Length: 345
Ligand code: KG4
Ligand code: ZN
Image 1 (cartoon, rainbow, N blue to C red):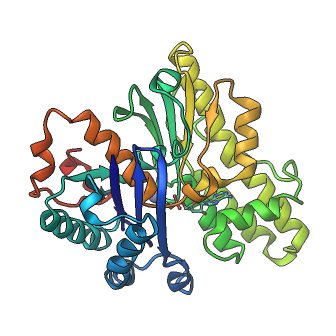
Image 2: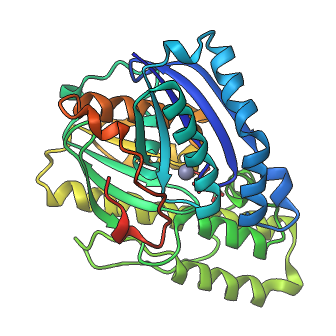
Image 3: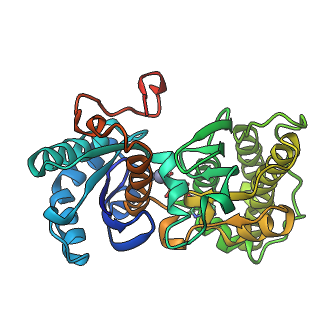
């Protein structure tokens, strides 16, 4: 089965063609990072306009790379949310038009859940090998922990009560005058730093309380950097990066182990996804401290892409085989990060 996936929730316009949920025939991404970099973050209005400009070319390029025409596509999968509302609407309007004109089913999918499927692209792991599993999405917008019982069943069991982990990396990087996105730069500087140099606060110390929190760590870093402002030198910036990075990741690993313990060790695997999953330091810490098998995405599928949207769309289509008319109803809308009550996925 061939699925065309389309993604436009933030600052990447992407399209991909996937066979049977796992084989990537094409994956095109038009990144806007350079356009937003001068502002130090994503400007929503500019993002929407950029999507509008390139979306048709990106979809055509994905079909052409995969050497298929719309006639051969079985269904279109599109990010419904969460994301920037104007950016989402560009992709959704385009996908609705394409699906209606070509008489194909249109599958709206949740972007955060789709990240998890990005980690399974190209793998041959069966449902039996994977589920029930812990699934962690750790990105610039989310630090979400799910229990998954099947390819399409996600139960949120923990999330950040304030900043997301990646967002905290970006904010600390900005304080250190490092370019956006801050995570990769902090990881690079941390390689030569001493992680024991600065002590960091222990966030969410209560054992068994499965939530994440990064605003306290961020405030601690703001105060620390301001107090050292006059003496900041490359060695100290590396030490600050290493100490911060260790604390940011240790919190996640600690909460993962608490979640594993709470459920009596029933989880067969840990799936990790999102931009922060690209971190080598994080991958090493998970390998060292988590005892269930962990699956990380190929680096090119950590950040936003449409292959993960198509892969998740495939599983939703298969799960809802008995109710295909659902995918010809186009009366649904986009939803942003801030209106989860209207999300019915
Ligand atoms: O998933 P993503 O591409 O975009 C969304 O937020 O949806 O994630 C981007 C985030 C940024 O905050 C970036 O700083 C972070 O992922 N990131 C990292 C690393 N690479 C990317 N954070 C820590 N270490 C990294 N190596
Ligand atoms: Zn994302």
